Length: 181
Ligand SMILES: [Fe+2]
Ligand SMILES: [Fe+2]
Image (cartoon, rainbow, N blue to C red; front, side):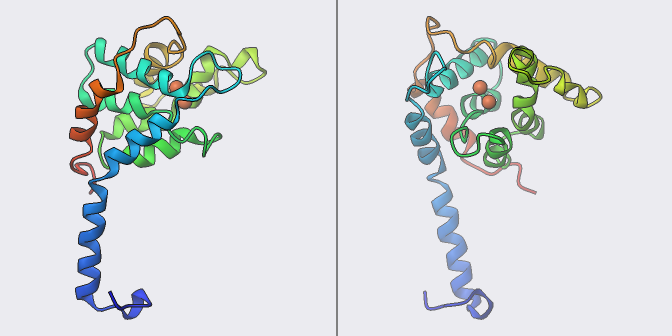
């Protein structure tokens, strides 16, 4: 590569660059799994680690018969919680968007607001903040996600499946950016 500015870069180098970027994207599953592993640290005030919470969410989603995209979305729904604590749903949805359905992205994107229903009133927040989405076609789906696969996934006694179990699903879901238009 010889270019110093994109505006004057030859098309041949930019095409090659795109190819390298595409190849680099194939390593996304490895990076995401590494991020998940790094979440296996205790956070004060939370009974289990974010890693355990994520496995529990994915395990419950899997055992309830949800499809692979749903299970993978559940597995990653809280990544970014440490980097974007006020907007981790949006952060995570941006990562998932090319690989899972629009509905699942919306559920992940808004889940922190729906989650408030289960605890907000105990900490001075509006538990009914989810009402702003009451007429949204996926409202009930987001309610279900938080009720079944998020707010209840802090049980230290629950026997989650190991990350290795979900790894092939992660690699399949992230194999192609199916939802990029
Ligand atoms: Fe969350
Ligand atoms: Fe969560």
